[in-house]
Length: 81
Image (tube, rainbow, N blue to C red; front, top):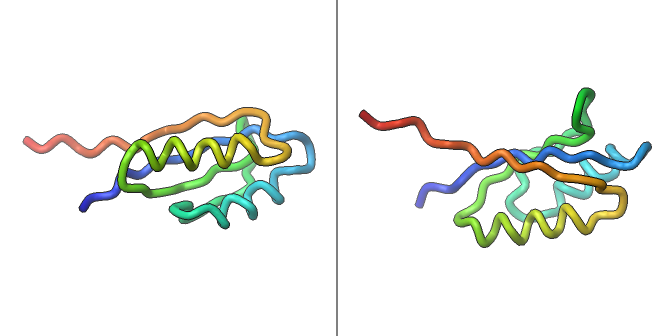
């Protein structure tokens, strides 16, 4: 079964980015998580079998202490011609 891939982009309270990036790695299906510079504070990469699982993962991110906002970018597959 082909897994769906996505990036979760997180805005955090000041001083929380490293803690949130580290805690994100404890969530099943999160493969990579880093504190970054720029518009977002943390970027996490994940793969998952279906959108229901993504909904659960997002709920876990949004309940973390210090998370102010998340944005999700689901990877789209290339068109087959």
